[in-house]
Length: 102
Image (tube, rainbow, N blue to C red; front, side, top):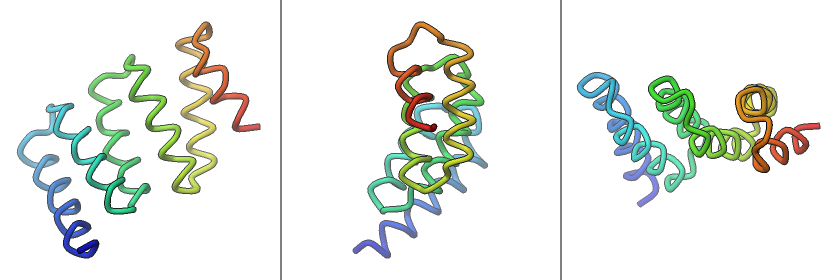
């Protein structure tokens, strides 16, 4: 059930944050669980934690942007798009994401 999936996703983030705070794969997996449970705000939080571990991961930045947009976190998505473009000005996705925020 969705309720069970949401509860598992919440517990997973708590466990990962506590027991494996430097495991990027774990944060990615938790974000995927949140997205599957229809909880994009929580997925965005997990992806933000992942981005702290790997700040130059353009794929994570793109996924975070998309997730923030889906969650209605427009200001955060704009900030992510601007920061990504600042780091990767030649990236097609960075340019498109930035353009999509305006």
